[in-house]
Image (cartoon, rainbow, N blue to C red; front, side):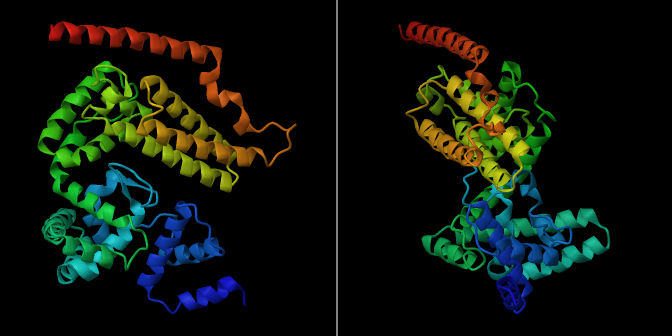
Length: 387
């Protein structure tokens, strides 16, 4: 009997809940870059048991899916450890749901699950939504009371830790609470957004900023989630930083950081980190063409951050950007090194960094020249205002 077969025989003695949580944990570790011997085989067996379609992401049951519905547009398929401002890791939903049902509100959760299952069987979607909303309100109140004291927060962390080893899953609980509180406002804000923002020009940015200003005044703690909804509509993800750069008097990093939407830069860096993780997975699975496209997007984002924000290098943003690009360079170097020096590799092509071309450098100088004129005019207006 092989090692994997022995392990599987042991796992069969565990409860279905324990095996389901184990699958989520193995997937989380894989996303964190931790490879465990035999993990792919065990994951395949567990997915065959719990996910009949063989998907690599968990599909919630009707009761939990209805409860988490307000979070759907904000979910990302990454590890909880991976910082993503304004978004929630899909991998944390299973442990959070188990924690709610077994520790936070066991009796009410049991009644809720039965009610939802009955209404689904009766094909009554309106009652499903009504029941889910009522249970969300109950969870909000209990969470607010629980997290109001250090003791309550510590107990919640400990209980949640029984369902996942991730220390960051608790952060997603607090995000979930913020989203549920602002659910109506976020839904209204999302409905007014354009279906797709192909060109995020000055007029479009001004319009979105006006809506964000109004949202921010009424729901300040939910602003990251509103920005995440905007990011979903952008054809070019890095365009999100224009909300910050357009609001700043100059393109200097310090001025951009002082705007209400400075967090958009961190959010773009979060997405750059998403691309890094996706690149690692693509290279691991020998999907070179996918890796090529990811690398092109990564280089475009790096270029945009450097050209749109002056003096970014010594800032916290610049330091994080350099760390990400160093990690990405190491991935690319490891992949290219697998081939002889006289054999070109698609990931080593200079075409992926088209900004290094003569045309790209001229565009860079043009942007910097335009920014210098705008910054000079802004400084002059500021001086006139002071005098």
